[in-house]
Length: 337
Ligand code: NAD
Ligand code: WQD
Image (cartoon, rainbow, N blue to C red):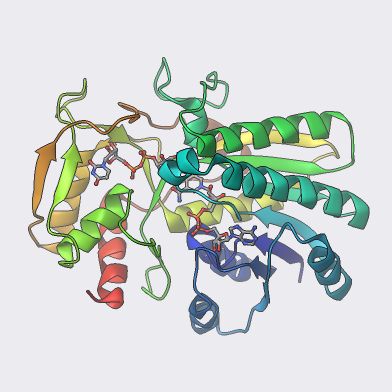
């Protein structure tokens, strides 16, 4: 069984990817400092997969620890999820974001070079597109100036990877640009664990439905969209997890010094009100919400062109918005209120 180091593997997307990697016959080795996750996730992964995962609690900036892991396991590659991701916090503490998000990539690349590890999948984001001039966005749509230090870390990490691969170090890399990840594992054993008041739409919806928040505010209904609310491409986290399995397997068949980027979305945009309606309908409940002013820095509309990932990786999204809303709510119910 090929062993893959998953940095940030106890987090939201990493934990779901670990499940899908096991289902595909890989052996994920999880490295996470638990700065934004809970060790219980490892027990849940064991319940879902029926086997114990190898887990290292530590920082992926720690080169000594990385070398120890590589000494103990023959690694076929790395999927690098670990990063800080709170957009607002990144404007307050930019150095914290640059240090962790850029620093960890640099340490990992040097580690991979020294240990002869060839394959890397990197977590990028649709945030690199800003508000695109044309929709849907393809991978060659020009990236815009980043809206936040967080967004900039993703842009700079992509640039680092491009420059590094050009220098012919003998590696193969894919950056996946995720659109808006939502949903949870259908077993409701793992899902998103937002700390404090959520910034993202779907955790805010589920916490409002659970009575943790009084009311959801819809940020603006005067945008140039069919119902006036913003449009996003909401991708189920299980589909996203599957994209990593496909990307990793694909890398294995490429020549050395390969680099490419792929959008990971459904290819369909939904408005914020459509998300609320889907949530209410599939879960048969009413959500307390009101229309409020626009949120500063919000993109009006964005959704992915998925032709490239469909054709080259053979990946297609399978889950609907309704599936996402059902699974998000089932997961929230396990967390209580
Ligand atoms: P998450 O916070 O749930 O998971 C990240 C994990 O990394 C956490 O478990 C955290 O404890 C860990 N971590 C952070 N820094 C670490 C370090 N230095 N060493 C070891 N572990 C560390 O986030 P997520 O939503 O699963 O996101 C995963 C990746 O995808 C991130 O790189 C994020 O920027 C990117 N991304 C997320 C979204 C989103 O909306 N969730 C969208 C686009 C891209
Ligand atoms: C979605 C829509 C809000 C909350 C963020 C990051 C981005 C990327 C993806 C990592 C917007 C509206 C939200 C609420 C609302 N992450 N909304 N009321 O803004 O697309 O992007 O996640 O790379 O970097 O910025 O996601 O979930 O915050 O918002 O009306 O209480 O929901 O205005 O239109 P966003 P989001």
